[in-house]
Length: 184
Image (cartoon, rainbow, N blue to C red; front, side, top):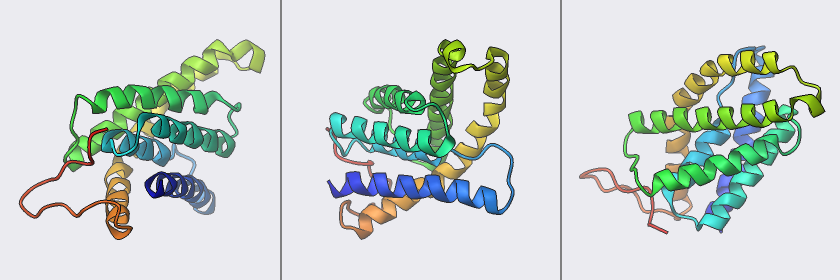
């Protein structure tokens, strides 16, 4: 349970810090989706049971909804669906180094952005959104994917070191990479 709370609290802090620093430094480009990196780590660590991981995905999506001012439930649904897909992929793939962490974060945020766009396009009329503006925003999301891929290794390392510090995870063996976690 400590691992789940750690994911939630650190994920929330990363969401707040990213947005806060962007305001302070007047950054107007697409910011990295650190919460998607957290979501990817949860799925690929396979250290939490699926229902708890899904609950964390929903919580992180809800926090992103609140932070970004999106219609409540949009990112919540996208994060939940993305987590299910990531969990399926985690059963079949292993992430061991920085390049694969970056690639997994890139693909994860792409999935979240596509799901979010699909949800918003489907609800465009009731929400009073213009579909052409949504398609333009989706094209601009490529920068979102790149920025997220670039922050994936440090966020991933933060969790590994934090879990070692909290004695939730054993340190990696010096002779090679260790798996992210125990199988479910």
